[in-house]
Amino acid sequence: MLEVRDLTTHYGSSQALFGVNLRVEPGQVVTLLGRNGMGKTTTINSIMGIVPATGGSVTFEGQELLGQRSFRTANLGLGLVPEGRQIFPNLSLRENLVATASNHLNLPDPWTVDRVFALFPELETRLTSMGNLLSGGEQQMLAIGRALMTNPKLLILDEATEGLAPLVRRKIWDALAEIGKQGLAILVVDKNLHDLMRIADRHFIIQRGQAVWDGTSAELEADEAARERYLGL
Ligand code: ATP
Image 1 (cartoon, rainbow, N blue to C red):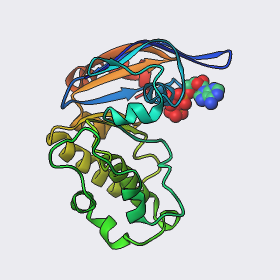
Image 2: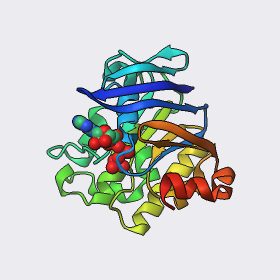
Image 3: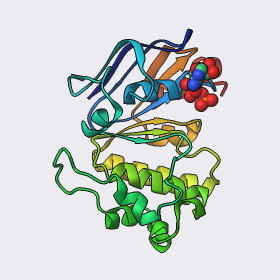
Image 4: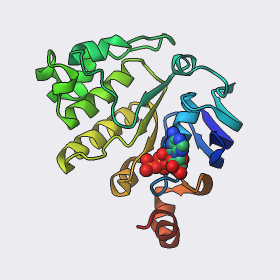
């Protein structure tokens, strides 16, 4: 579904990615792992066209994404939950959900506000609250709901549980496991390997902007040397 090959990206004269490779198959939950500053966000932003890549290729269902504008990439079915949530602060929770809602691909059983509330019941009571008055956990759930309202085929989450209490993190992982079971493909960047092992099919690790390891949860569990070397765990 998504294939990233030999991706390179620069910030001015400084190179951040030196050859990232990863694949997401339909219905898979895949992680992109690596220590701080190794290039995970740059990879996600390069896939989405937010940061222009300088080499390699990124195809989604056979279509090249590099060189596309971000909104076109989104319209092809990639939904981003960005690092830092990026909730519209001066829109209400409901307005945040409907502001970018669409079903460009005419997917059956599209996401609705009610379906988001079924996934995250705590959001329903905050319907009219402004974005900037929501707690961190509520904002994160809203950011996921907002991405789902674009009816993506692939949901991409960048650090979706950063700074959240364990109980809230748990709710978010349970919700992602649930929508993963419903068949949505998910690519997730997160530091919480323990929780990810439970829900992910495959893991890709990058180090200093380069692909260095990939395998299943069982393989990562068994490879203590890789966890120690690449993740410090
Ligand atoms: P973290 O886990 O801390 O979010 P990361 O793995 O997502 O890290 P990136 O944020 O992609 O890593 O950063 C990769 C490299 O690119 C780092 O060396 C970082 O300093 C550099 N970098 C990131 N954003 C910029 C930018 N806007 N301008 C210049 N360099 C940048």
